[in-house]
Image (cartoon, rainbow, N blue to C red; front, side, top):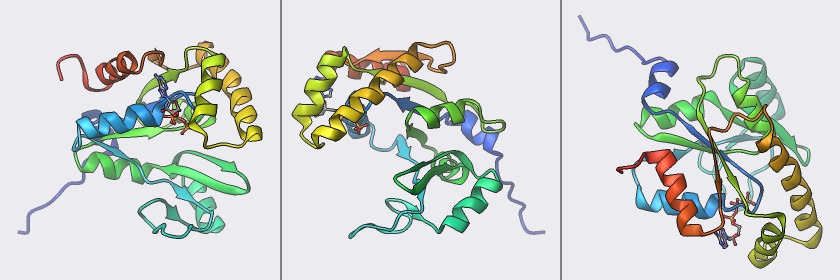
Amino acid sequence: MPPTTTTPSLQTLLHQNRPIVISGPSGAGKSTILSRLFAEYPDRFGFSISHTTRSPRAGERDGREYHFVSVDEFKRLIDDQGFIEHAQFGGNYYGTSVQAVREIAEKGRVCILDIEMEGVKQVANHPTFPQPRFLFLSPPSPEVLEQRLRARATDSEAAILKRLNQAKVEMEFARSKEAPHEKIVVNDDLEKAYQEVKEFIVGKDA
Ligand SMILES: Nc1ncnc2c1ncn2[C@@H]1O[C@H](COP(=O)(O)OP(=O)(O)OP(=O)(O)O)[C@@H](O)[C@H]1O
């Protein structure tokens, strides 16, 4: 008889490698801290590849930056409960599929999900998806956040003002009872914040 292979359930896979959701206002320092974490632990983590209905930009490849799909395909996946969270921005759909998260865990890696507030709410209230661990990264103050966004120099004035407004909403949500975060790390001193995030994610003695 041929050997039988059983596919581990999503529950089992994600129990062994429980995903981490990191959220926080734009400019809080998520990318800065995560790139350092990935550099320190090159084989331990993975980012899931999102689905989008926007067109690929020059140099982007299907299945690498995104899974590029049609609106119909995207809607079919929504109906099939294929997403842990999805949203519409600027006329396009974006979402994180269950399958994309599963693929990271199948490689024996911990999936890190960098998602915004509405997505966090969807994941936290998802009826079947096993609950990840939630971490919120906060800027030390609105004033410092503004300075950092300006110093980063990646956004227009209008975009900076929009991000600052949205930051207020996200900070209020993080402080509310509805928020699922197990921990809030304040990114004042980068070294200290990095150590706190690292401890939350990999534990004390890693
Ligand atoms: N502790 C810190 N002290 C000073 N500057 C910092 C600190 N942490 C991050 N920065 C700087 O703040 C800016 C915003 O950080 P980063 O781009 O990592 O934020 P983000 O949360 O990933 O934002 P987005 O959600 O828009 O991608 C960057 O220019 C980064 O170098």
